[in-house]
Image (tube, rainbow over all chains, first blue to last red; front, top):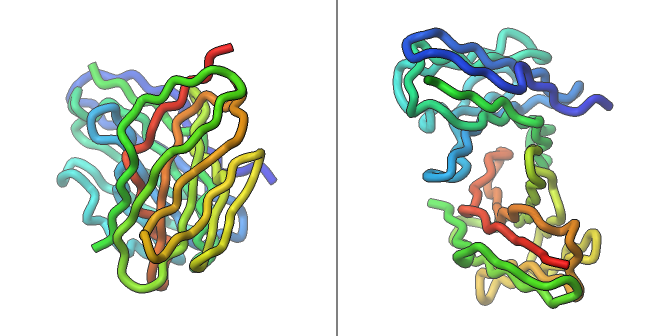
Length: 113
Length: 112
């Protein structure tokens, strides 16, 4: 199994630009999670989906952030416009719903200048 | 609501030393408990888990016992190696979904 796939692995952009992060969950998994990790705030859950439907987006910091899951094998996290304080590592994770164990991708390191 | 509290870090040990990392939790219902490990530059990996009281999770020489009476899930290893240097996260889920609540994580450095 390929595991959770995230792209790009690294992204450097300028303030004000749109950023799109991508995630392909493990085949057969029906829950998908987006996390953000920073030194200051640690690991934060941004949003999660069950069966492609957003269940809890209370962790999304503000309207500049949006996430979609158009089908079971693909999700995006978009930041528009980006700001320097969005610099972080963004992780995607997937699981079989109600099975508890989440499998994490390698992360996307975002730097906003 | 659910919460996980981990001891403050970082922790630095010499190779072959004994390791204990404390974790306590607050949760509704009957949570499942986890330890995840993050090696440098990588995503989190499940290290071990326990799903009910008195269960012991173990993997790679690490152990943790689900203690309901003290709401704790402390991680232990008898003899750490340099390759164990990583960030360790305690976490829980409860209820009908897979949403994890994480502790802040603790960095372990093992010197030769």
